[in-house]
Image 1 (cartoon, rainbow, N blue to C red):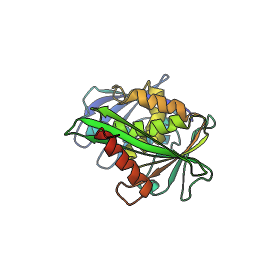
Image 2 (cartoon, rainbow, N blue to C red):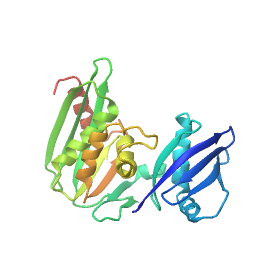
Image 3 (cartoon, rainbow, N blue to C red):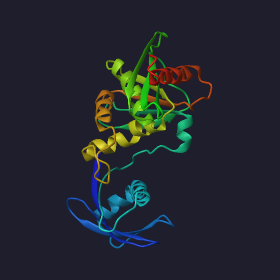
Length: 260
């Protein structure tokens, strides 16, 4: 999937419209985005306009995110887009989400049924603000049902960081395995590994607003580990009665308390 790099410069900001200049290596175009109507008006017809029309959904996500983060006049946003990229929808979290990176052509799909003969990761993270301690816990499970438990404790940290590290260690244990299923209650981790990681690596591990991606070194490490693999993700709602995920939650909490 080819990365499309475009620089967006904010020219004017009004309540009902935002004027932008979009540039690639060859040309620049002017457009106005109407956030209420969620509509874009182009002022010309060119190759870049045709490119932007194909990735309008992604462009709108960037602009709406920038608006929420206090969009500034004159601000420059360095964007990476992918033509035909499948962003996750709310309903997708009820299914199995797959990212196939076994070839150069990235493939993201969903299925109501899980893959067969996969090694599985169950993982959870926790942070206790009153103790300023964090931890994670999880286990890997082979297709034959053999399990290996892991856990770790940290000072400081955060819930999202622990959720990411919990999955990262599981993938590390399965470095030589091609097909892996990840079970987690963290949509943050799923969105990162299914969607955003592909954009970040083409933007020097920076966000569209020029700041370093949070937990970049861990995202980079797990990104390398996922290369050449077929990854399947299953979101499990926290405290929903899933015995394996509940065990990981208990293990993470115990690790946070320094009792593991």
